[in-house]
Image (cartoon, rainbow, N blue to C red; front, side):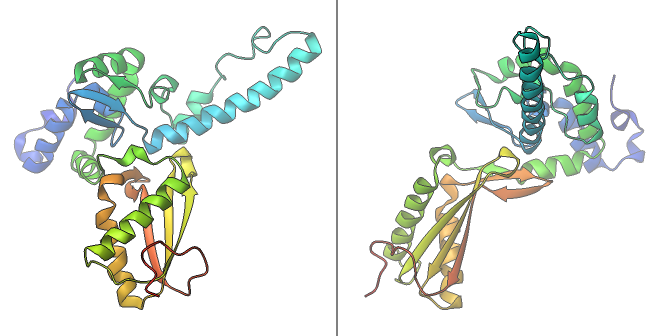
Length: 270
């Protein structure tokens, strides 16, 4: 069944809106399931990432599993049986309905695909259609209610070619220090003593990195250094969509302050 927006008389809907709706209607199922930024194309293959919605749904499922596991263990100990044998390992009645009411429902089978790689777009679409066809159809209808906004949101998501190379705070700090030295060498920043502090933000299970750099510079110098670092980080960075807005995988803040932490090699002018 076609969406009403695609069947209205052409005068009733602005052309831009009709064109956007047609694009949404033509998208392959895997993109609808992983909207807006849950996939990457690599030489024809599809790598499944994780969207904000998938991460939030995972939290619900994990919370339910922990609660059910604890209850199941207690129940099993009383009866001398395992949680699985006592029937406690099955789906929680009503959980899907509750998640839908809160607007956070994503099928567990879709959430479990994060990190998987499909050899082609067709294979990815078939797999997603098989495990969540009805949900994908409903998601497409949701996107068609505001197709221009949906496409605009997708366009705000991007990822650098190396964004999956960083897994720890130490790796991020080492990269920042290397890029700081490169910025000075290229004349993009003034040599100055700097201290780098990296903090992981694992909210909603989507880990991002917040880098705070204390630099022996004035305000103008800090602004210049921050802008240079933001550009240098692009290959390792990613803009993921969270709560309808892009959020950087690695955010950088450079502030003028006395250096109290470690000094970045090659940047101490003294």
